[in-house]
Length: 430
Image (cartoon, rainbow, N blue to C red; front, side, top):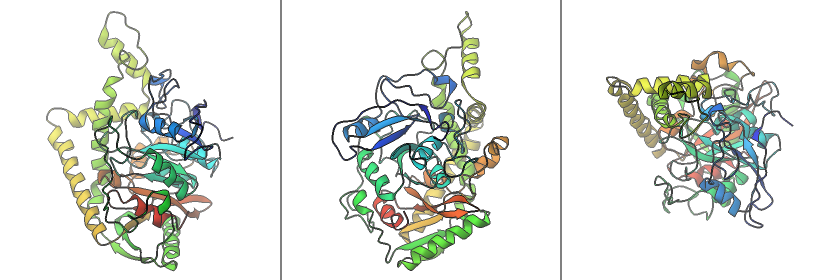
């Protein structure tokens, strides 16, 4: 068994019957499970046991699924390799000696290793799609608002979504059928409009949309998302587009000029939201106590110094700076303006195409230990995934092949609530 797939291995039985009866599911360790430790990969929450289930966990249990453990992850979802976990890194079962991607690396690795049939992750800027690509499995990042975030420990509220991993698009879609839908506990959720205006809108469920029918599918290829990508990754990408053409799809190039600024905008917004969200971990309300000796400020500082890892501290500091007096307009407001520009670019490109396609990650998996030395390089590796979160759109990563023996993923992006269209197209490949 691959090392460090799970932070907590504990079986949670679901109902006796249901659409997922007999299926095992790994749940990312930032999703609350009643009575079972939920650590977020952090020393800060190493002994935290939630008193309630996240909505997605309740729905899994009602659907008959058996949860087999809480999957390893980058601390508080902050990372691209699952190496910032306080519980040690996870190795990539599809490429031993390499990282599984992040931050939902344990979830993707559990599916790739056959230790779970399905898995749940969360995606703030690519944290489902990156590990899906690196581990050679399928990962879906739903439209913002399709899946409840109630019970997900918040990192970047306006960006993140819970989504499924599986070996096939149809299996991932079946898991999405279970977890999607409105939730009275999460005001950002909504039922998708019936007339989503997509090719596959008539299918009664997401799983039913996995027909593999790409005849007449129009694919837009954003040139900016191929620039600077690894040569082998680009070659594998074009081979996969060729496969789709052979089945009746057509492609044309599109331009998304705003994505040049997407990574900067994303990290300003995500770190600002993280700075605000993680303020609750003060050793009093949540988190390990720093030991009160009469000086609350010192106890607060000690709890956070000991509880948070380097990457989390870095993002809290940068986010606090971006939100501070005199800098809010200079950084945060500009980042929100850039976000609106990114959304506009995607909407315009999708007026002329059914889906957009790019490599999921511009590079193949990193060797274990390689990425921690250069945080900036890690941030730039998210260049193809973060724009989708800024635009609140759905995306899917499917295996596209290999380069030098390492997995490569193809990313498809669709219009808001166009999951059925993405599933129909992606199921031609996996």
